[in-house]
Length: 174
Image 1 (cartoon, rainbow, N blue to C red):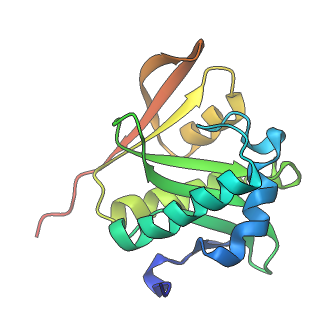
Image 2 (image 1 turned 90 degrees about the vertical axis):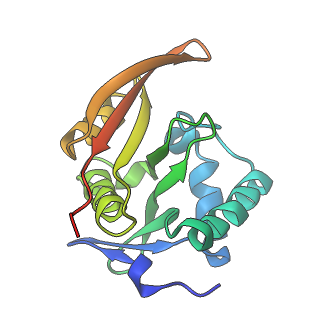
Image 3 (image 1 turned 135 degrees about the vertical axis):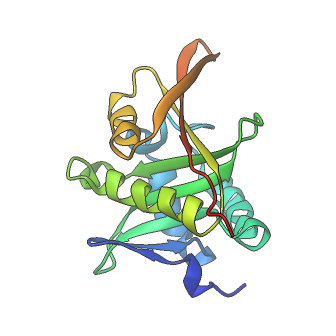
């Protein structure tokens, strides 16, 4: 599968590209790090699970025109991921993100997720995007609030209170 240039997103400091098999070593490192991935849906992933996830993530781009981006500094250093993915619980298309611990605290997650949310509404034509964060994941909740997503619901999962955030935008009239 070739990567459409329309799927590549750049910001002042970041270059976000759809995942490819060449990203597997970086994704194994990210998804295997409990500091980066323990609070994600599905939790820390083994190398085999990360490879299986990647195969599905690549297919999503061809099927939906959105999916998971690897996030790199403009000079190429791998920082993390952000994604637009259909939630398995049927709640809708969700914005997801995870960054390596050494890439935190300088606004990169907000920059990447804001760009992904703009892509969702402006390019992919999604009128509603959600995100889910655990009650105690204050950093992720702060990122979601900073990009304009609003708390819309809560639910329990595995004994944890989960907050649902939502971004709703009307499609332009044609």
